[in-house]
Length: 163
Image 1 (spheres, helix red, strand yellow):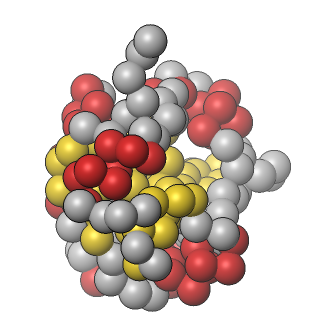
Image 2 (cartoon, helix red, strand yellow; image 1 turned 45 degrees about the vertical axis):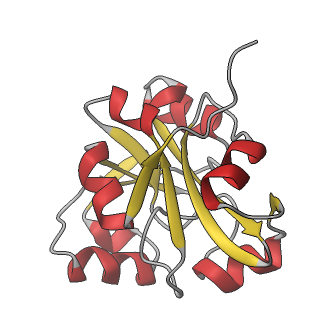
Image 3 (tube, one colour; image 1 turned 30 degrees about the horizontal axis):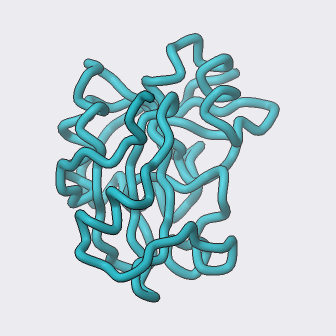
């Protein structure tokens, strides 16, 4: 693992960081860290400190949900939050068309289109969270409040509830 300036990030994401005047270290891993568990193990943090950037399709419109790595999105809660008739996980093609990134490397901001963003409130439970920097090999740390602000996220409760 190596830590470098934003130049290690996907070029579009590095440009987004510059545009936001964010100077964050980007960690690059030799092996892909496509899952929250893989990323947490590589970083040495708890899986709940990983931010998953997930695209859903709500009434045929993409929506980004930011969720901590240890939780699952409750699609019904997302549907209720959006007032949508139906919500489902987006396919890989829609994810790439919406964000400009492939699944496993989608960052929380710096996308090719503007979408509505829902950020689960549990992200605020940590002083620092880690998110993908545009590739399955790169991550960056940021305090969750700043991350959610830059993503344009609305704070919501959309985690699956413990039974």
